[in-house]
Amino acid sequence: MADRTLRVGVVVMEDCTPMVPIGVADLFRKLEMLPEYTNDPKARAVEVRFVGAHRRVRTAGGVPIACDVTFGDREHFDLAVVGALDPEIEARLQQNRAVVEWARERHAAGTDLASACTGAFVLAEAGLLERRRATTHWAFQPQFAARYPRVQLEPAAVLVDQGRICTAGGATSFINLVHFLIERRLGVEVAAGMAKMFLIDVNKAPQSAYAVLAGRRDHGDDAILRAQDLIERAPGQDRAVPELARAVGMSERNFVRRFKEATGDSPLGYIQRVRVEAAKRHLERSTAPLSTVAAALGYGDPVALRKLFTRLTGMTPGEYHARYGPRSAPGFVRGRSRGRDATVAAH
Image 1 (cartoon, rainbow, N blue to C red):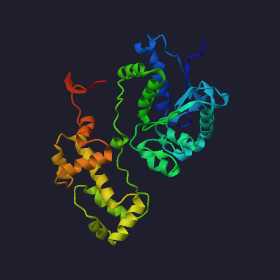
Image 2: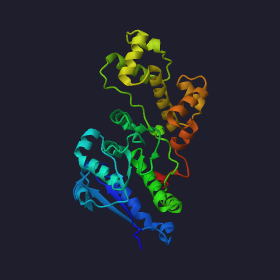
Image 3: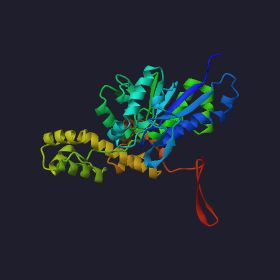
Image 4: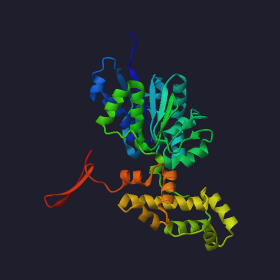
């Protein structure tokens, strides 16, 4: 009888984010808690093993993880998951060259590969994402796009399925990634049971909803930095492009050209993104109607803000407020206990 064990390799890299490999392994290992899995006579056994360059790998913050096998052991896996590199991407890639070569070799040998967060850099570095669609954490997407122009980046996607390769967005999207991989490998019922057991949001918002404005400020153009400050200090003030150009002592044409070169965005596009970020803060902190938020940001018609907000975030203002606005029962309960304020978050 053929061995039906699903062998999962969870890659551990030097100075990687420890949350991802530990979380991935834990989710796979806890399948035995699910009645949908344990009561299925046709269920495949799942074997999860940590794999790294050495038997003991030091992850970010000095957290050690003991690996079951090393890259040199040439162990076969049906599926391997690569976690997140910590922020210094290029340095971490250089530090972990062995995993790049290992990923390329394992994929050629038949192992399906998945990455969470900035783990997509490893797969792209191995040449496995060329002419494929992929995603990574929104904060690192400009760097990813510049480094791997032959990869079709899907900036809003939380998950991108390309058959034998799957990539996931920000770090905690590894939960959605594992849910997807379990659905593919072990069936819809097991995946549904997992989602219920671990309260997984299978309809996670697009990454664009999480992204925050991080306008480039390392360009060294003092005049453009002044213009950025003017825009960001008063997002509700109606600043036309000619006015901004005069404020920093430039012709409009020269200002638009230099602004684009410095920030990668047009002045109008930058203004719009700043206003959407300000709208997010309003929606997160208050219950004011959209018309009030729109007026505070210089929009006489809230429809205009709604259209812009939806285009840039992938969610309507109402959807964003429902997800990220002030919490209410039953998910979040505030009360008093023995004379002290008490906060209880329902899990």
